Image (cartoon, rainbow, N blue to C red; front, side, top):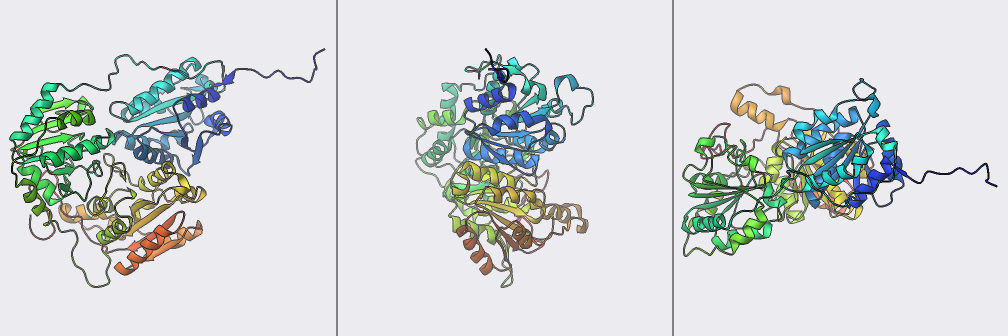
Length: 572
């Protein structure tokens, strides 16, 4: 006789449990997120999953930025999980940031039940429609039978071709529905061809152009690092003796200490990089959008050069700068084939000539004894980490000073917001990077930020403390929104008191979280606290009280050509 107290449990899993199975099938080991009503079933399923580590941030924007940092360091898709309504809208800036910088990511958003959609229900927004312009693709799961296919497709789309964020909207009733399904094994997306094959004729043509050129320059963007082409790039540059300039996103793809490296190109680029591009007779652009920050005046950009543009996304070709040869394909594959043809030049003075120009860049001016230059702080961080740290920045003057004065030695080590220019990105991105590199056991990750930027996501100090992350925060405190002040001063001839920003006592703030807080006002103090911070376990905050009104130079004025630079020393 059957025991009346027995309860027969359903054998089928629910949608949330199926989702976790699908994530495990995609080798997901970390999710950054913040719970809420619409995603409670997912968090229940996640609680029972020992293979996926959930990182609880203190804001949804920070969760997405942390997933972004994780993805930039690993090359794998970062994963963020947020609830519906305000949770989803808080994530939009992080999604747009990843989209502009081509970062692979899958963002899971909760949604109200399907029967409540379109009825202005509590915490309902149309996040699917709201984010269509800032994602590679969007999904809304309206039938549980589609969930395995959608998850498989989302990860495939995020990491193939030009990487980018993919959003999956998950109604609550779909997550509680019962199902017998299992994760999808294969993926096929009709019409999606993420890569094109570059012809052998085109490879030989490039090799011939390199052989016949006298003033070639390689312009390297973030796509070169994303394609894993760093070694092939170095081989090409060394064999053919071609100077290398990078975009902001391309920094690290070519060693900064290499004698052929000219520095960053563009509005805030080095004198050498901009002048070399202006005088080049051959320009090979790899994995860059050639956007307005790179070429203020498209008509005068490398006016005498035969231009080649290679990108994984054919929509970027001929979009900003007309070129003679445009090729859609994988940069790593192209360079491997090209290196088989390229030979060293018989004689060239071009690399030596361009290296001489680099010495004319005014890194920073001499100041009275005891004052602290922001550039010197970054050079000290570089010295004590030997250029090997993963460095995240926010946006502003400190971002450009880091690009110039920290000498990155490898790809995927410079995490910064390039396309969107997002203040508040750096600290959570550093947290994501530290998680990717081993959590408490990771090598130090440095976050270089400004007093304005840090206040945008400083609540994530608790996240760093909770997980014991070795994030070393370097705040360059100049009392201003410095880049805005610089533009107002140089180009708008207006007073800039409106961008003077007040800050809390950052050292006391760190102490409230149980984090060591250190302060420096002189070069000697800066040197000492950097060494101390790097030696301490866990998070450490360093505040550097630097000169208030120091400008970023060199600078190409908006709309000017790359040969029209403000150098800060009276020589344009």
